[in-house]
Image (cartoon, rainbow, N blue to C red):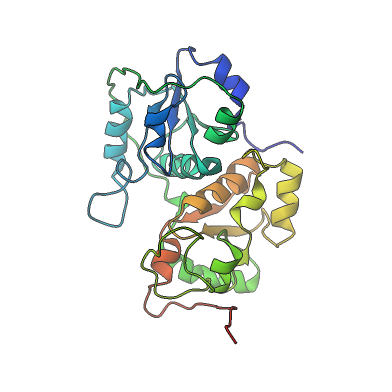
Length: 286
Protein backbone atom coordinates (compact mmCIF):
# COMPACT_ATOMS: atom_id res chain seq x y z
CA UNK A 1 0.00 0.00 0.00
CA UNK A 2 1.35 3.41 -1.02
CA UNK A 3 0.64 6.81 0.48
CA UNK A 4 -2.45 8.40 -1.06
CA UNK A 5 -0.76 11.65 -2.09
CA UNK A 6 2.72 12.74 -3.13
CA UNK A 7 3.22 15.10 -0.19
CA UNK A 8 6.52 13.95 1.30
CA UNK A 9 10.11 14.49 0.23
CA UNK A 10 13.16 12.84 1.76
CA UNK A 11 16.17 14.58 3.26
CA UNK A 12 18.15 13.23 0.29
CA UNK A 13 15.74 14.90 -2.13
CA UNK A 14 16.04 18.21 -0.29
CA UNK A 15 19.85 18.00 -0.29
CA UNK A 16 19.82 17.41 -4.04
CA UNK A 17 17.42 20.29 -4.72
CA UNK A 18 18.78 23.08 -2.54
CA UNK A 19 19.52 25.20 -5.60
CA UNK A 20 16.62 24.10 -7.78
CA UNK A 21 14.61 27.12 -9.00
CA UNK A 22 11.04 27.10 -7.72
CA UNK A 23 11.79 24.92 -4.68
CA UNK A 24 11.35 26.93 -1.46
CA UNK A 25 12.13 25.68 2.03
CA UNK A 26 10.29 26.99 5.09
CA UNK A 27 11.35 26.02 8.63
CA UNK A 28 8.64 26.09 11.31
CA UNK A 29 9.81 25.26 14.84
CA UNK A 30 8.16 25.23 18.23
CA UNK A 31 11.38 26.81 19.50
CA UNK A 32 11.58 29.83 17.21
CA UNK A 33 15.23 30.41 18.18
CA UNK A 34 16.36 27.13 16.59
CA UNK A 35 16.33 28.60 13.11
CA UNK A 36 18.91 31.19 14.12
CA UNK A 37 21.29 28.53 15.47
CA UNK A 38 21.40 26.77 12.11
CA UNK A 39 18.95 25.84 9.36
CA UNK A 40 18.97 24.26 5.92
CA UNK A 41 20.66 26.63 3.44
CA UNK A 42 18.07 28.75 1.66
CA UNK A 43 15.28 28.05 4.15
CA UNK A 44 13.22 30.97 5.41
CA UNK A 45 11.70 31.16 8.88
CA UNK A 46 8.00 31.08 9.73
CA UNK A 47 6.91 31.86 13.30
CA UNK A 48 3.83 29.72 13.95
CA UNK A 49 2.47 32.15 16.50
CA UNK A 50 3.85 35.55 15.50
CA UNK A 51 3.17 35.05 11.79
CA UNK A 52 -0.01 32.97 11.73
CA UNK A 53 -2.03 34.11 14.73
CA UNK A 54 -4.13 37.25 14.99
CA UNK A 55 -2.28 39.58 17.40
CA UNK A 56 -5.29 39.97 19.73
CA UNK A 57 -8.10 37.54 18.92
CA UNK A 58 -7.88 33.78 19.47
CA UNK A 59 -7.88 33.22 15.72
CA UNK A 60 -5.70 33.28 12.63
CA UNK A 61 -4.64 36.04 10.28
CA UNK A 62 -6.89 36.54 7.26
CA UNK A 63 -6.42 34.95 3.84
CA UNK A 64 -5.24 38.30 2.46
CA UNK A 65 -2.66 38.49 5.25
CA UNK A 66 -1.48 34.99 4.36
CA UNK A 67 -0.91 36.18 0.80
CA UNK A 68 1.07 39.14 2.13
CA UNK A 69 3.10 36.84 4.42
CA UNK A 70 4.08 34.55 1.55
CA UNK A 71 4.97 37.60 -0.50
CA UNK A 72 7.28 38.84 2.26
CA UNK A 73 8.95 35.42 2.29
CA UNK A 74 9.57 35.71 -1.43
CA UNK A 75 7.26 32.83 -2.35
CA UNK A 76 5.90 32.91 -5.89
CA UNK A 77 2.65 31.30 -7.08
CA UNK A 78 3.63 27.91 -8.45
CA UNK A 79 6.67 27.49 -6.18
CA UNK A 80 7.02 24.08 -4.56
CA UNK A 81 6.91 24.79 -0.83
CA UNK A 82 8.75 22.31 1.41
CA UNK A 83 7.94 22.64 5.11
CA UNK A 84 10.00 21.14 7.93
CA UNK A 85 10.70 21.76 11.60
CA UNK A 86 11.37 20.37 15.05
CA UNK A 87 9.25 18.04 17.20
CA UNK A 88 8.90 15.49 14.38
CA UNK A 89 7.30 18.16 12.20
CA UNK A 90 4.52 19.15 14.64
CA UNK A 91 4.63 22.79 13.69
CA UNK A 92 5.51 22.15 10.07
CA UNK A 93 2.33 20.03 9.94
CA UNK A 94 0.46 22.86 11.65
CA UNK A 95 1.69 25.28 9.00
CA UNK A 96 0.84 22.74 6.27
CA UNK A 97 -2.72 22.42 7.60
CA UNK A 98 -3.16 26.18 8.07
CA UNK A 99 -1.77 27.03 4.64
CA UNK A 100 -3.96 24.32 3.07
CA UNK A 101 -6.95 25.77 4.92
CA UNK A 102 -5.96 29.17 3.55
CA UNK A 103 -5.96 27.86 -0.03
CA UNK A 104 -2.21 27.54 -0.62
CA UNK A 105 -1.20 24.77 -3.05
CA UNK A 106 2.06 22.94 -3.81
CA UNK A 107 2.84 22.00 -0.22
CA UNK A 108 4.99 19.11 0.97
CA UNK A 109 6.71 18.04 4.18
CA UNK A 110 10.33 16.93 4.49
CA UNK A 111 9.93 13.50 6.05
CA UNK A 112 11.68 13.35 9.43
CA UNK A 113 11.96 17.11 9.72
CA UNK A 114 14.82 19.00 11.31
CA UNK A 115 15.57 16.05 13.60
CA UNK A 116 16.50 13.76 10.72
CA UNK A 117 18.45 16.41 8.81
CA UNK A 118 20.62 17.16 11.87
CA UNK A 119 21.05 13.47 12.76
CA UNK A 120 22.45 12.88 9.27
CA UNK A 121 25.03 15.65 9.80
CA UNK A 122 23.79 17.56 6.79
CA UNK A 123 24.73 21.14 6.02
CA UNK A 124 23.23 23.97 8.09
CA UNK A 125 23.86 27.69 8.15
CA UNK A 126 23.06 30.52 10.55
CA UNK A 127 22.79 32.96 7.66
CA UNK A 128 19.27 33.95 6.67
CA UNK A 129 18.81 34.00 2.89
CA UNK A 130 18.16 37.24 1.10
CA UNK A 131 14.73 37.10 -0.54
CA UNK A 132 13.04 39.39 -3.00
CA UNK A 133 9.45 40.14 -1.98
CA UNK A 134 6.76 38.99 -4.38
CA UNK A 135 3.07 39.62 -4.92
CA UNK A 136 1.35 36.37 -4.03
CA UNK A 137 -2.05 35.58 -5.49
CA UNK A 138 -5.33 36.08 -3.62
CA UNK A 139 -6.37 33.10 -1.53
CA UNK A 140 -9.69 31.55 -0.58
CA UNK A 141 -10.24 29.59 2.61
CA UNK A 142 -11.29 25.93 2.54
CA UNK A 143 -13.57 25.64 5.56
CA UNK A 144 -13.97 21.89 5.01
CA UNK A 145 -10.56 21.42 6.67
CA UNK A 146 -11.38 23.21 9.94
CA UNK A 147 -13.79 22.33 12.74
CA UNK A 148 -15.26 24.88 15.13
CA UNK A 149 -16.55 24.25 18.64
CA UNK A 150 -20.25 24.14 17.74
CA UNK A 151 -19.49 21.82 14.82
CA UNK A 152 -17.64 19.49 17.17
CA UNK A 153 -20.57 19.57 19.58
CA UNK A 154 -22.96 18.69 16.74
CA UNK A 155 -20.53 15.98 15.61
CA UNK A 156 -20.98 14.03 18.85
CA UNK A 157 -24.25 12.57 17.57
CA UNK A 158 -22.57 11.12 14.47
CA UNK A 159 -19.77 9.72 16.66
CA UNK A 160 -22.36 7.99 18.81
CA UNK A 161 -24.11 6.56 15.74
CA UNK A 162 -20.83 5.30 14.27
CA UNK A 163 -20.90 7.59 11.24
CA UNK A 164 -18.28 9.95 12.61
CA UNK A 165 -15.07 9.70 14.60
CA UNK A 166 -13.13 11.88 17.01
CA UNK A 167 -9.38 11.41 17.45
CA UNK A 168 -7.71 12.70 20.61
CA UNK A 169 -3.99 12.73 19.77
CA UNK A 170 -2.73 13.86 23.20
CA UNK A 171 -0.91 11.70 25.70
CA UNK A 172 -2.86 9.02 27.62
CA UNK A 173 -2.62 11.03 30.85
CA UNK A 174 -4.10 14.09 29.14
CA UNK A 175 -6.86 11.94 27.65
CA UNK A 176 -7.75 10.37 31.00
CA UNK A 177 -7.82 13.73 32.78
CA UNK A 178 -4.89 12.99 35.09
CA UNK A 179 -3.11 16.07 33.72
CA UNK A 180 -4.17 19.01 31.57
CA UNK A 181 -0.91 19.48 29.68
CA UNK A 182 2.07 17.56 28.35
CA UNK A 183 5.01 16.69 30.64
CA UNK A 184 7.46 19.61 30.96
CA UNK A 185 4.93 21.97 29.38
CA UNK A 186 3.16 24.75 31.27
CA UNK A 187 -0.49 24.64 32.22
CA UNK A 188 -2.21 26.66 29.51
CA UNK A 189 -5.18 27.82 31.50
CA UNK A 190 -7.42 24.78 31.02
CA UNK A 191 -9.75 24.37 33.97
CA UNK A 192 -10.83 20.77 33.43
CA UNK A 193 -9.08 17.60 32.35
CA UNK A 194 -10.47 14.71 30.32
CA UNK A 195 -11.56 14.27 26.73
CA UNK A 196 -14.46 14.91 24.39
CA UNK A 197 -17.08 12.14 24.74
CA UNK A 198 -16.63 9.33 22.23
CA UNK A 199 -13.09 10.31 21.25
CA UNK A 200 -10.55 7.58 20.52
CA UNK A 201 -7.14 7.97 22.14
CA UNK A 202 -4.48 7.66 19.42
CA UNK A 203 -1.39 9.66 20.48
CA UNK A 204 0.20 11.42 17.52
CA UNK A 205 3.61 9.76 18.04
CA UNK A 206 2.21 6.32 17.23
CA UNK A 207 2.26 7.45 13.59
CA UNK A 208 6.02 8.05 13.53
CA UNK A 209 9.25 6.09 13.59
CA UNK A 210 12.12 6.85 15.97
CA UNK A 211 13.82 9.08 13.39
CA UNK A 212 10.72 11.27 13.08
CA UNK A 213 9.61 9.88 9.72
CA UNK A 214 6.08 8.66 9.15
CA UNK A 215 5.29 4.97 9.41
CA UNK A 216 4.28 3.07 6.30
CA UNK A 217 0.80 3.41 4.82
CA UNK A 218 -0.02 -0.16 5.87
CA UNK A 219 1.05 0.52 9.46
CA UNK A 220 -0.92 3.76 9.59
CA UNK A 221 -4.05 2.18 8.14
CA UNK A 222 -3.85 -0.56 10.77
CA UNK A 223 -3.25 1.94 13.58
CA UNK A 224 -6.30 4.10 12.89
CA UNK A 225 -8.51 1.39 11.43
CA UNK A 226 -7.92 -0.68 14.55
CA UNK A 227 -9.52 2.11 16.58
CA UNK A 228 -12.51 2.43 14.26
CA UNK A 229 -11.18 5.57 12.57
CA UNK A 230 -11.81 4.63 8.97
CA UNK A 231 -12.03 6.42 5.62
CA UNK A 232 -15.82 6.12 5.41
CA UNK A 233 -16.29 8.34 8.48
CA UNK A 234 -16.35 12.08 9.04
CA UNK A 235 -13.27 12.54 11.23
CA UNK A 236 -12.26 15.38 13.54
CA UNK A 237 -8.85 15.46 15.24
CA UNK A 238 -7.88 17.58 18.23
CA UNK A 239 -5.18 18.03 20.89
CA UNK A 240 -4.63 21.13 23.07
CA UNK A 241 -3.97 23.92 20.53
CA UNK A 242 -3.94 21.89 17.28
CA UNK A 243 -0.23 21.39 16.63
CA UNK A 244 -0.22 17.64 17.37
CA UNK A 245 -3.64 17.17 15.77
CA UNK A 246 -2.33 18.84 12.59
CA UNK A 247 0.24 16.04 12.44
CA UNK A 248 -2.57 13.46 12.69
CA UNK A 249 -4.73 15.41 10.21
CA UNK A 250 -1.82 15.21 7.76
CA UNK A 251 -1.54 11.44 8.26
CA UNK A 252 -5.26 10.79 7.80
CA UNK A 253 -6.03 13.17 4.95
CA UNK A 254 -2.79 13.43 3.01
CA UNK A 255 -1.06 10.09 3.60
CA UNK A 256 -4.08 7.78 3.94
CA UNK A 257 -6.42 9.80 1.71
CA UNK A 258 -9.41 9.96 4.06
CA UNK A 259 -11.87 12.22 2.22
CA UNK A 260 -13.31 14.10 5.20
CA UNK A 261 -10.89 15.06 7.97
CA UNK A 262 -11.09 18.28 9.94
CA UNK A 263 -8.74 19.79 12.49
CA UNK A 264 -10.32 21.31 15.60
CA UNK A 265 -7.88 24.12 16.30
CA UNK A 266 -9.74 25.31 19.40
CA UNK A 267 -8.95 21.86 20.79
CA UNK A 268 -8.74 21.22 24.53
CA UNK A 269 -7.82 24.78 25.52
CA UNK A 270 -11.26 25.80 24.23
CA UNK A 271 -13.31 22.69 24.99
CA UNK A 272 -11.90 22.21 28.50
CA UNK A 273 -12.98 25.74 29.43
CA UNK A 274 -16.29 25.77 27.57
CA UNK A 275 -19.37 26.30 29.71
CA UNK A 276 -21.87 23.48 29.24
CA UNK A 277 -19.65 21.35 27.02
CA UNK A 278 -19.66 17.63 27.90
CA UNK A 279 -16.46 15.95 29.08
CA UNK A 280 -15.48 12.38 29.90
CA UNK A 281 -12.82 11.72 32.52
CA UNK A 282 -11.50 8.24 33.23
CA UNK A 283 -8.78 9.09 35.78
CA UNK A 284 -9.57 8.80 39.46
CA UNK A 285 -7.18 9.37 42.37
CA UNK A 286 -9.10 6.89 44.49
